[in-house]
Image (tube, rainbow, N blue to C red; front, side, top):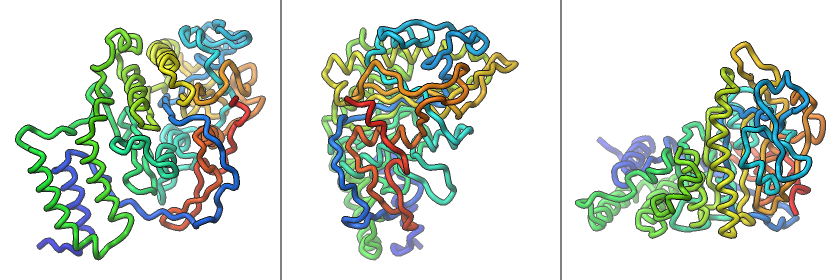
Length: 431
């Protein structure tokens, strides 16, 4: 027999109900309570945001800095088959694999002194997204969750953040409530699955079923009046709002000019970048597009040019598109990866994992373009100037958004956490 006061049975039922009624996937476990001490540990400074939105391009697998953003033209042994080209900014040179972006170097802030203490993909990926090392006892929030937690949604009928690429290991909302998790989209051209009901499933039928579910939930919600329980009700409400929203047109790439779609590239990453622009345009404030794999242990000098062909077209078009629409100034574009690749070329004509020195890139959102920050040595091996840790990069993103970097929130186990751990923002990149 089903008992309404049995937490485990209720949890299973609510999850299944959400899947059946709304066609969306609920979290596999209840979100836990998060608290902040009122008026305590809050920042005395009110950082004025330089950006409203973030488009976060994640190069999954470890992007080779030497074959992209930090080439070493005087070291042929390190560079292998990769050549170097000039850009539209005197003194800045890139690998030949990025010819279109070389023409827009005046929009880019290239950080060549990134370091990480994580040399494995899963751990490095998690660290890059959260600023915290992976633990079995806790899951930390990603930047999109922090942004929504502190500042709310940009469009009340659309998700606060969207992840394009459907990374099942994405930390999502972490220990925050379920409503702060990003909407996951696998294929940008397919949009959101099951968001429109079948013709026989009228609004009246849907509302009747939701009413039944709410009545079944009532006793349980009364007995367990907790934030983690209310999160499921919020999930229902958000899903219904989205299903009825006229703003769903943001997910329709067919509304875009065919020539612009071709310019972005008809691959998933290119169309993902176009979808990111559309979503930001409609009020979604944090959109991530993942791309890879850049794990080039084998055939680095074949695989990297293939990957950069897609990246170069998509990112260069995204920057131009945002600028032409007057959106680049308020949209911070971040290109990040978990680590770089070794200067040594292995026996498989590849490069191996290299967290000691690599590159990330920022553009728009108040960042001053046409600059390089930090450097690695003549081999691209070690950082020689202005080392930047992963939490520092995330703190810089939070700084641009005007987030309270030193405000403490507590996990369910009452442990204190901040947006970017102990990271320090690179304030001199702005202006």
